[in-house]
Length: 410
Image 1 (cartoon, rainbow, N blue to C red):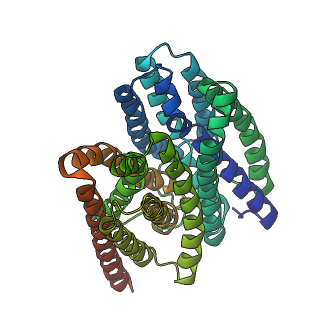
Image 2: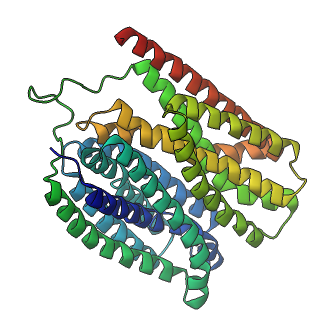
Image 3: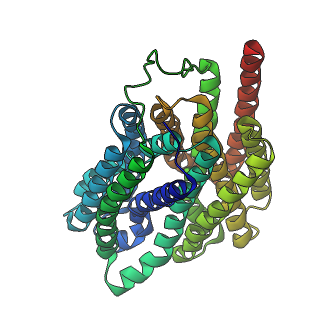
């Protein structure tokens, strides 16, 4: 099977970027309007926390299911299903009579969202060569990050013009439109190069390459631990920095919304910088990720030293820390599967690694809250530095095991 030509590769990159843009638009919107929902009395704070936690859980578990299905069912159909289901859940949220219904609907939305990433990775890996795949993955991540910035900037204006329910109605309608665009354009692209996906779950056939997915299990454990640590810092810090700033500097909680915009802007820049550094340093995932973990540990140490000095410095260091985690995610969750997997099992491995990210996210979202209650924010920031240092260790061990495997097969 031939790979896509330059024109259709560009079309696929843009399509996937819009697809992931839509995914984030219909996922982070609840967090963006959470304050308005609580203020209107439609849901209380404890229930709001449960809603967001349920999305993390169902999204993470769904990654395993979606990844497994993506190697067995045409991935474009899985993404079409995901778009329609998330559209339905976004349109249902405004008519939910109470918090229990919101919990149920948003839990289903987390499952719907899980049908985006592993199938999309499968499509790009099948249709592109490795260099173009890396570029396509970067485009997709940038689409998601841009959606985060956009929803936090635009949601307040929509709420002022109408109400918080309008945000979900607009996003849900956009997802319906995107589902149609997705099927039309991806079908055209597939036909242009007679794209066929390796389905059947990674079972080798005699006529196929003998190269199979055979990763050293110890290597995989250390990689997954590194990814879990990355997920805990990425989403845990993002979730609790507004509260951190409010409690430490005694600012009005509405002012902490600045962090919600600055953090994704830093993340957007970090993805591009990470891609450049990764390519300049010879595409060494374990070394690159380890260096970024070390820089993030330094950021956390500096943040701990200057805790309480300046809210602006706190926001900038926190945003840099989260941005670096997005870069590590790009390397370990996005680039690495293309190195370790084959076309047959790309979706499964991608889903498993992404699942690990959200294990870390779920643990930290709850764990950082408990830890800050017991040790204060000084202790919590110190914990961030320890987690980043452990990430360095996991990457070093992963690199050594990978080198041993290469030496054995040389």
